[in-house]
Length: 105
Image (tube, rainbow, N blue to C red; front, top):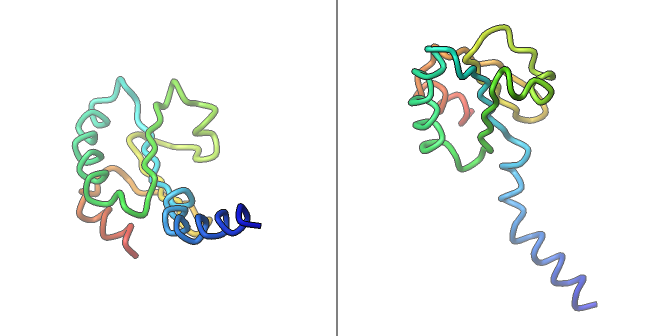
């Protein structure tokens, strides 16, 4: 009886942190691509500014092909925002401020 009460209490305490597991920002890049290397600075800034509600994941185009299959990227670098069971593609040309603003919507 006490154990189940503790489990319920811990669930209530840690529920806000569960949001980060369902909301993801995924970067798909290629180690050989010059634009990907340039975008890494924006990626680091984005992770520092907007990491509260999102889990940040980075995949390499060649190394992680099975993991990125569901995204089917047409170019790199590319960001995908997963929120409320929807996937939105964000091209790399956006700066970190624009992407952060989009994440907060």
